[in-house]
Image (cartoon, each protein chain N blue to C red):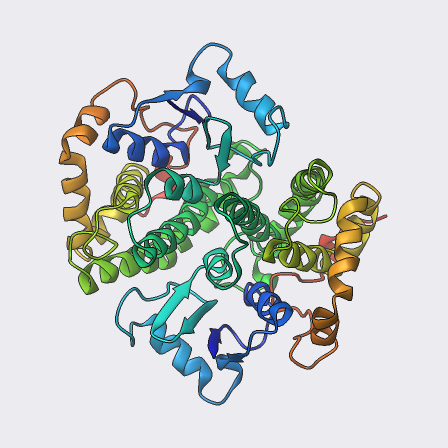
Length: 232
Length: 232
């Protein structure tokens, strides 16, 4: 059984791994959500097991093997077959990872160790530029990637974890920035269809309705602060 | 011959690819530094070639294959042999990539599209927290990774592109934050030795002394603004 290690109270980057595990029906234990799990996670980051220690969660343990870095975990668990498809999935996933850093930093432009309230002024400067410049740029690239491929999967012709992660980013943006995202939706019809198709996959639909799916909240990557959204 | 595409006036993330190509003695063309090269790069990002278009440079073209995302380019060009070593190199490289985003954002906490001078106040808040909290955390992890391995290579027992990228990050930090980095140096003896060992590799030494090595400057990731460094 695969062990997943991630902060227990947020979706965060761990959610990208959970979606892949759930969609594949892979049995896993979400270790840090169990008793003593956070301490176990921190111990592994401190080097409790031999070999390369993870810098940060999420990471997984599969037997004696520990793998960190979200995109690499996904590649390890669920790489599509074929060297080219595998590389394309990783390339897209790493671009999503870049996008996610920028999404996170809209509410934490100064430091992860400070509260939002202590960097709200800077956030109010960063967020609108992100929403006007960066969000359309990333979403436009993803939409064109679909349009140039098979229209349904970000890796043309292949179902992959990158579709699931794309779903998560779209869902998160819709939660965090409802007004700005609504304005963008008409420019990204293929992505909106992908979102709905992923949400309707039987195992994903069951997962999203289950208590295993942590709700969006104000501790995670995607946070809804009305003052950071664009006004209509 | 491999074609490398990257902005012509900075080291940036392209430098991580250049170091790997130079160290291996792989023939390559640094396309955007030649006549019309930037236009060619932008055209490929706009989708001039079939298949997945890069979101951003650096990317390479090897025959008809285009690969983007720095870590993935390095994996494509120079992955160490063996699935475990290959994964460890990528895990370390992706952690360096996270580090590099935070280094960059010390001088650009609000937006990449604004000049430093237009976000200097925010930079003066972000940089000291980075230098006090984040830089020691990343460097400490790298130092422990060496100490727990063979002491010389970040992937234990294996020479890899991740050593070269570690060198580049150390060199860049020493340039950008001489005072803060000096203060840290005594805590990272294995990393300092790695830096010197990489710099002395014959092909790397020749490259660093050549005009192919762009100097550190105030357009790249690593920038020296005295007001962002810690005072001694």
